[in-house]
Picture 1 (cartoon, rainbow, N blue to C red):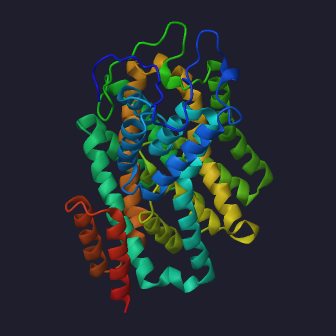
Picture 2: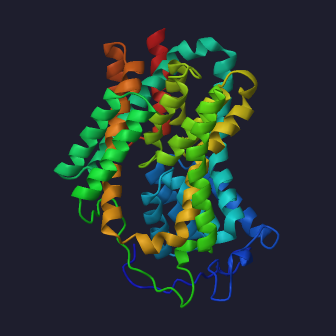
Picture 3: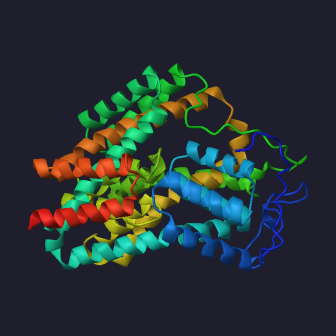
Length: 444
């Protein structure tokens, strides 16, 4: 990334079919003058088509997604420069939710306002969500598929994928004794107190310990020069969102965290408890899509909404599709019993899981520059990031390992898949396909 101060005025490329003005408000602008679909429908359409292509081709997980985004939006389309792109990535590293999807939403916001953010999310999310819904519909129609050999292969490859995620995140986020200790603490607490309460407690302890013990952490954070904002304007990273709208979005983010548990407790409705757990999972996840695994497992498997075998089979299948791993929620929603089974349940859980990440992004943008340099916040976030490594390590053992590895051949297949992913750098889609085929052969 560039280390020079650059003019951050947004320039439309002469070759682009759709030219739009800068999304930053001038001293005389307010949030009411932001781009809307009525004024810039072509820009919204451009964002949707761009991210639909990315959603169909972006394999490899969130880090790979960020590379695809930069190649498309910075290098090819020139929607923004490296400095502004780096600021968006840095911001989304600090926020709960699916970081790569949030960067995509922020790019859509920068290009075409709030409708552009929505278009970017739909385009990037729809391909993998539809593929996983199709997979879930076939499991629901043919219950024996959940016990078939190739589904067992998908469950086994999930062990390799999560192990690779744990190792990669530990190398980046657990440097030094204190961060390693925080990861161990989170793993022990989440294993000793199973379910969402233990996971939330582990994250809170790590954030508090990090704020007290760590000083100005820089691991995993982008180091960027600060571009000069125009006098009287918001910083470019705000994407035209005013402080008033940001505060409203943050309020909308917090309210369901308080209201959904109350609704669930007062009504006794299982669906209310499910929505509360899924929304909380989307609001508490730091560190990438893999970290949502234990939270979703506690939300849908423990209460009996989805059998563990089908949960792990879907998680394995999610590795074979492009786009964000959070679309695993569409698979789980499609398996819900009763009237919610199918597309209705898939849409319900998908929106519930993604919504907090969208709201906190919109809410944080106007205030990011005021908070990002505070050492206490950076230290707390570093502790929280180390804690999610421990949370994921706990999930690697239970339910991923315990649900998939039943004999030495299963362990050998998991080890082979891990070597292909981590050492040979084989694309995940090929490893997943090979594991499913190997599982089918082993079952014959």
